[in-house]
Length: 532
Figure (cartoon, rainbow, N blue to C red):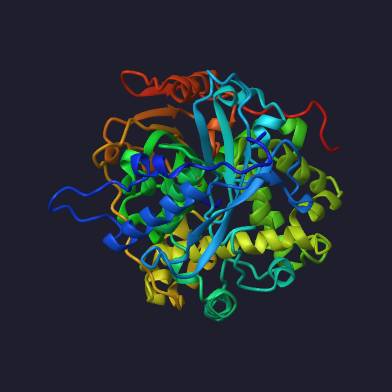
């Protein structure tokens, strides 16, 4: 949630003799309802069989994609509507870097989703080509495979508004001062929902997590893999949970990191409310760290003093946007990265410190828009469009403004940092013009192997309760808790207690006899000298 060497130029072709042996979707037992629908189950089985026969035609990636050799790219064809496998098709972009070990060490493909919804996983193979030490052992065993989910990037991308208008700043202060400002924000949300329908309406009904999970199974088949090895982070954990429910016997190894609460009544309205409270707590964690290093940043000696500083810069930007482009909305967007990732603690504090010392330029460059970066702005708008489309389509959202107003007013009182910004971001779902589904009931079905769940207990974007909930629902799973930490995306951080266990699971299928609690990773250290 919010806040990515190949076999060769020739494609991989799986012979028909192999198809029947490993590409059939798991059948429901007598009297068991097929999750997601029987027609869709039949459709994904047909699509997977076709993909297994066709394989993937790997070739050098287009230069504009920024994926240099030996990474190669290709496409997998999937139906837009799995209930109609012979109907309209789209292509899903995939890429891959070959494993670095011997043929005896190779265990197949490891497919990755970084989250979102709306995130691209296409940069994942770079963890091999850049020789990331954290992934060196896993890289010996697996080809690293990334993909753009449907609607994202190079996979039938959608749009809801002109990208340059999307990034234009300053935007209105998310925290409403009166009813007129609420009405203005509601109007913007309706216009955004209308823009999605106008620009991308034919695809919107099919941009759901279950359909992306079905795409994932077709990709697995196209790769010639009998079973899926999967690493999902943030929203990617929900995608993995839904995949594990729909295709339990197709899972070989699954790591889910920073977990979305998969309870059906949590998807997605309640999830965002939970997020608001968690972000408030993690933002205060960061403020306390900034205060601890007042000798470097000069932003306050206590968390309360740093908070007053935040309120001051926010009020200043509301009265007169910094550099004409950085208002409260842009400040929230920039500062929330510190609540997402520990790796942002130092750079955000340094940028703020320089501003207080009289140098506005770094803050304007970091928090303001870059209208010259048209390609980057297209990506940002597309990512937000898919985020909105998937969350709006996955579940039925409240349509009563009174409920939205009541809930967010209540939560804002205790969690003012993110609440209203998050509300306006999701409000298009209240007037969404495409069908809204009922979430899949995530559960353990026959054939699901042990999964590995990794979570920091102070994660803001995906609160810890989500990991506990999925742990209950996936029987036999193991939970690794990084206690006293809150960075989002734990498997990408150096913490030997966690890293060694992820390696052991992916390489040997080993998990501990019981759940594990790990000490937190090292807290970021500021540079000796900051802005003066």
